[in-house]
Amino acid sequence: MLPSGQNIAHYNVARLRAMPGDPLVAEFVDNVPKVNALAERSPGFVWRLNDNSAQVSCDVSFQAVVGDPLIAASLSVWESVEALAFFVKKTVHGAFLRRREAWFEPWNGPNYVIWPVPIGHLPTVEEGQQRLSVLARDGASDDAFDFAYAASHPGGSE
Image 1 (cartoon, rainbow, N blue to C red):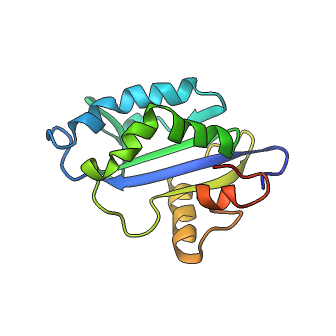
Image 2 (cartoon, rainbow, N blue to C red):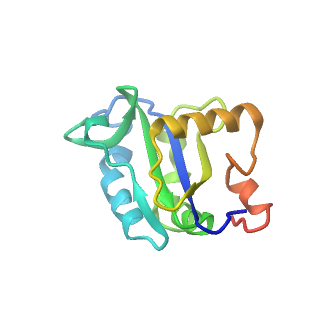
Image 3 (cartoon, helix red, strand yellow):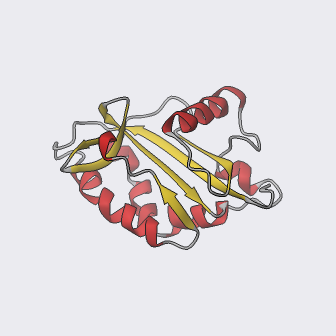
C-alpha cells in the first residue's frame, strides 16, 4: 500500500465530555504528556504536532482545534502503519483508547484518518481535517484510510 519513499500520517480528533480541569476528564488530560512522550520513544515514530499556540493552556498539553478547548486533536507521522498500530494498540495508549467513552462524546463519523505522506513532509491540521472529511464522505481508500482498510490491503497491518 505504501510506495517506497513514503511515511504515513495519522490525525485524530475527539470532543471531551467536560472542560479541562473537570475531574470527569482529568485522567485523560493529566496523562497526555506521558502518552506523547511514549509515542516519541516508540519504534517508527517520526514526528508529532507540538504547537504551543494550539495548546488549551500552559497546564493542558493537548492540541485544541479551532480554539475549542473541548476538541482534542493529535497529528503525527510514522514510518509505517505497523509502527503506528503497535503504539496505538499494544502500549499504554491502548489502555487509554479502551476508556475513551468515559472522556469523549460520541463522534458522528470517523474520528481518525491515516494517509501516505512523502518522507520529510510535515502535515498540517488542515490537511488532517481534509483527509478526515474525505474518509467520512467517500469511505476508505489508499488516500485516506483506517486500520481495518490497511489490514485488508497489501502491505497493510492491523
